[in-house]
Amino acid sequence: MEITMIYYLIPALVMFCCGLYGFITRKNMIAMLISLELMLNAVDINFVVFNRFLFPEQMEGMFFTLFAIAMAAAETALAIAIIINVFRWGKRIDVSDLTKLKD
Image 1 (cartoon, rainbow, N blue to C red):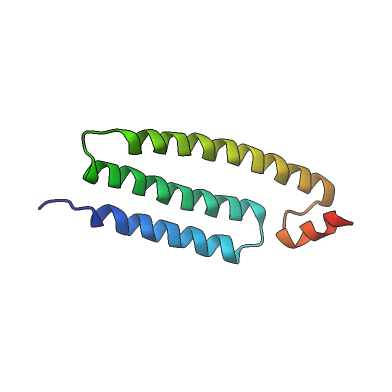
Image 2 (spheres, helix red, strand yellow):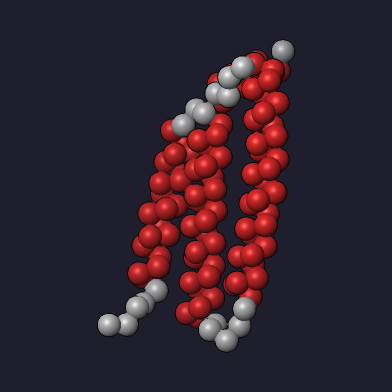
């Protein structure tokens, strides 16, 4: 049995849809961050799969995925720092509380 591209794309699609649903429905910033990371990981899987099946002798998809993982780590560190500062200010990390920062 040959493993085709669809065996990798379907789980990546499910991961992306779960992340999108979690990002839209959650009010907690940590849960939204986790959902965003889930979507980024699904995209990284797609980069690797398309590189492997379309251009197996080249490594551009792999390098782009490593770059995307590094950017996701930096984005997570920055988001956690912002969430910690919001928590120190208001003792809650719900997105609805962020409108109070305008005042």
